[in-house]
Amino acid sequence: MRPDMGSLMKQAQRMQAELARVQEEIANERIEVSVGGGAVKAVMTGALVLESLDIDPGAMDPDDVGMLEDLVVAAVNEALRQAQEAAAKRMEAVTGGLKIPGLR
Image 1 (spheres, rainbow, N blue to C red):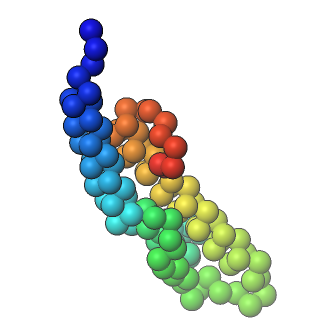
Image 2 (image 1 turned 45 degrees about the horizontal axis):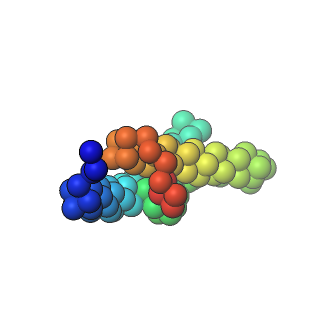
Image 3 (image 1 turned 180 degrees about the vertical axis):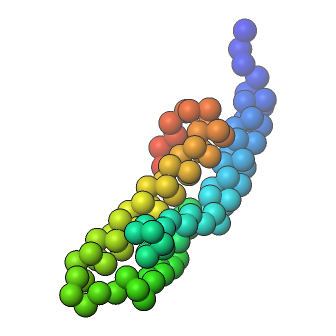
């Protein structure tokens, strides 16, 4: 039995529309991460853009700049990791785990 090409095309178009909708939702999501007991907070979008970085003035010790630098790196990396993980889960829900080139 041959698959109905019209039906397959409609199904592909629906999936494409759903993927576009989910990608837009992902891009609009915000991931907020706090490290060092709230000393550094990073907010990243689902599009993997660092939106803001807040540093508690109490975390700024001129004698230990390295610690602050490490906290900033940790906050940004964790926000990036969480944003990528959230995007992957959302896309997997749409694609059913099917790996589609060019999609996260």
